[in-house]
Image (cartoon, rainbow, N blue to C red; front, side):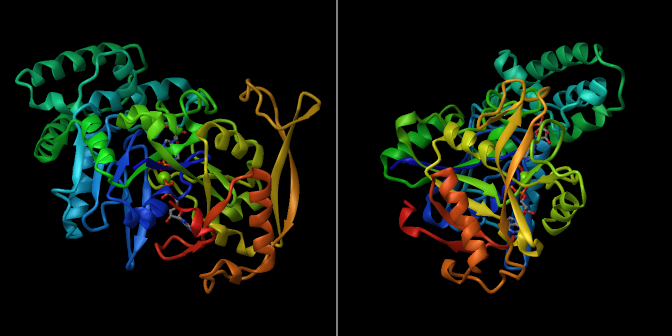
Length: 428
Ligand code: GDP
Ligand code: IMO
Ligand code: MG
């Protein structure tokens, strides 16, 4: 069987957690392939709410295996907190949560460097979640990192000390900040026990065996394609490949094994942290989207920047990912608007464009909008596509026409069941 993929097509928080949780029942394995505790994936069902950072979003579905892939970076402290939450909710996770030995570890000093580096940048800061993501991936590519499998080595403590010393040298290059390293280290070593007790696997062998055995596998992305280290709004990005290609390196599967690529977009657009956002609304409309969409970060609680959907941006990420199906989330957030705008082109350097400029941070971009009629009613009662108000259907069809990819699902609320299946036959 091929590996299907779910990923975000904007700047993150598209509702990946909800959609993975919904679809997980169709699969045997859900596997996270990149990112780390910078992610916050929200799941709501049976009147309960969970936010997952490292644990894949299939964990609440019985019998389903959840793999944290080699491309993920793991902070034992966050992971252990998440596992405590699973225990508290009586989730039988022990045999179903696996971790790849080649996944890299986030050390307390990675978080220290992240915070010191951000503080030194002043106004130019990335707006990092300060979870140590950038420094950990730097150590990975710099060939200095520590991996989950290393915990079992007899010289682990010495390796830890050596890397920590290196980090403390680095931290001196930045202005001093407050960081209680001793306390963080103590917690970190306590939490390592949780990782030690987890089922560690050679992820690449595990996943390929599963493919050969005909298991159905869903790869769960974190962040969004506009935060991709290569193709996002660099340097205002995260430090991993968030696009489909990241599935191959982050799990150890070949490109020929990729099946459906399910891209998620909100019915509008948000971004948290610094960096360009062409359709951002810094006015009362943006404020209204934030209020209606409860747009506050699931990891940091920061208010998310809000704006209209940006179709050239989505065309770009659909191209990068080879998206075969689209999911539109948070359609209900637009219920109150008389008219809805969609960015259909960019104007910069005196001309109209469909492509983003290379120098996206310094070239001022003015979006060109097309207006659609709103529906001004609740979608709470709608369970079938045919029951959507006609203007909502017109908006969906317009998106589908312009993006040239079938929209197979429409989400109308945070809860698991608030999902309209549009073209189910397209689903694998
Ligand atoms: P993720 O990082 O992509 O998993 O998304 P987040 O969990 O960070 O952010 C999505 C937010 O929107 C969460 O609070 C979800 O509960 C919520 N959400 C998801 N789908 C919908 C939807 O269709 N409508 C509304 N109103 N909220 C939604
Ligand atoms: P999920 O998986 C939204 C953003 C941060 C910052 C930039 C770099 O929940 O969609 P980092 O901590 O990676 O160094 O931060 O990326 N960012 C996210 N924004 N959703 C996320 O994850 C994000 N993960 C990182 O706000 O701008
Ligand atoms: Mg999120």
